[in-house]
Image 1 (cartoon, helix red, strand yellow):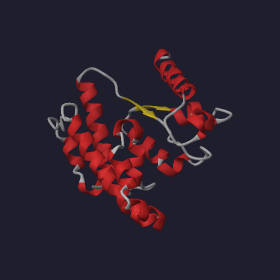
Image 2 (cartoon, helix red, strand yellow):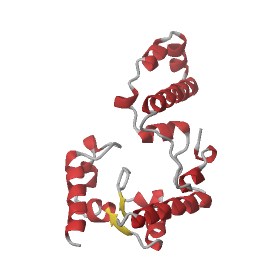
Image 3 (cartoon, one colour):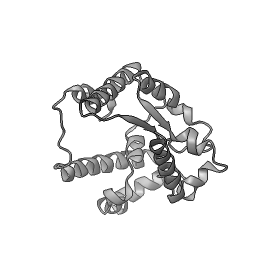
Image 4 (spheres, one colour):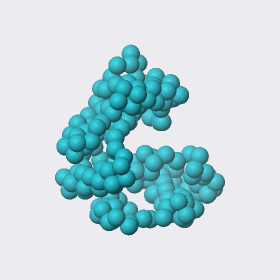
Length: 193
């Protein structure tokens, strides 16, 4: 499965729901099976050494004992499935804008305000954040008159060592210091209103 096979326009329907909360076990099983299948395919391509391990069932045993919830990050799934792409086709931006517009309309209907928080992802120097189309995404959101909290600008660009805001300076979630700085900026944004 990749982004081309998913019908994003379903999210534009007001009553659309995948009921993922009640189907969590099913979601976990599907993703785990898909991950295992893709992992085996990848290992078979990587080297003869891995092929020997697969034939000896050593890797299969490791895969069957894989704990999806503890070990797998959404980024890793997307990378493995080959749907990570630094530049997306224009139609995806149009759909993204429609979905964000629907979210804004929904929040206004409920007498609320939608605020978009841009969280940068890890990149080795943190100087290349825009390769993931940060400016394009923020411009789309601002065109809808939605306020943006740019955590990249407010936290990471100002920090003397932004990679230290990731555990072990590696691609991962933010460190406790990183989350604390993000929370501080979000709180500050709302307190200044």
